[in-house]
Length: 394
Ligand SMILES: Nc1ncnc2c1ncn2[C@@H]1O[C@H](COP(=O)(O)OP(=O)(O)OP(=O)(O)O)[C@@H](O)[C@H]1O
Ligand SMILES: [Mg+2]
View 1 (cartoon, helix red, strand yellow):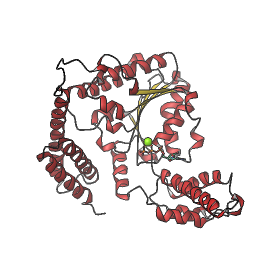
View 2 (view 1 turned 135 degrees about the vertical axis):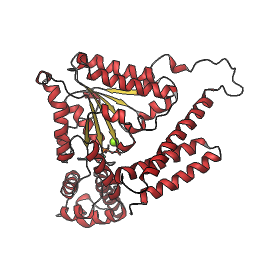
View 3 (view 1 turned 45 degrees about the horizontal axis):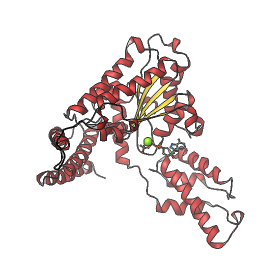
């Protein structure tokens, strides 16, 4: 892929956005403007000094303004009573109470018991999380200066951000509050500010009693992206979030075991205000060749519970899977399992009749594309260099 690819894609989507915009299809226009902004932003992370960088920066600003404007129009339309409505202008039903679907509170016994040991490698990330969460929870008195409460996990899709957060919650026996961006976004225009307040209030109540709490906002970029949308409700929601984060940093709450962990695979879409509040920014990298080997071994070992493995050439599998995420590797091993089970059924075999061979994996690898683009990796690395807390360790 050439250096211009990202910019070209940006232009392509910008054109689509503009036609939709002209045609009055604002929802589609917003979608494409956002994709264009995403491409240009990645381009700018990678090539801040490119000849056309300033031009793209201007476009990004312009498109963001347009997105804000169009979102406002749509929001206003949504508020207008529909034709045939009784026109009473009755408030939406969920304005007076917190939407129960907004977040999910999971105690340790309500979730899988996975811990760090169930995750292959990710040693740098585990170390960073020990320093950020596990040690402070273990003995807060060792931190007269307090510790950061906001942690951002960023990196390519399918490489363990969500899994490691769940494992971390188990490591410290925390209450995990899962915040679903999809829900918040759909309620965005209602009472986000109140919802955010309620979220932090519940979290603080637990934490003040000494129970560790992790507020986990997966795909945090969906909530807090750069485009500062000026729709009142959303803006107040964001501001409230910033206020709450600052509150956690205050002296009063310096020692409570409450953490806000955000995960994203599009860190460049985050607003700088949010980036700053997530003081620890940890890169969750894709698996190296050695780690891919370990991932194959780890998941294939589970197959050995039921099948006979011939000596598998794990080095070969690792070599063939450059650019594959951890999640890709899990899918490949699962597909091998499915193929074998199909064969056993179709041919009327016993599991012990059909040994699993390296070839079985290679076949599947051929039909599975890697999900990590090498160009995209450079964007993560560059972002990590600029904003990552532990960039030197990865
Ligand atoms: N280090 C690891 N060891 C074992 N399995 C892993 C590891 N990392 C990821 N996986 C597996 O890969 C899959 C994807 O992981 P996960 O959902 O945590 O990725 P993610 O980084 O959150 O991706 P996304 O950005 O798409 O949300 C899961 O099935 C998980 O169990
Ligand atoms: Mg995830």
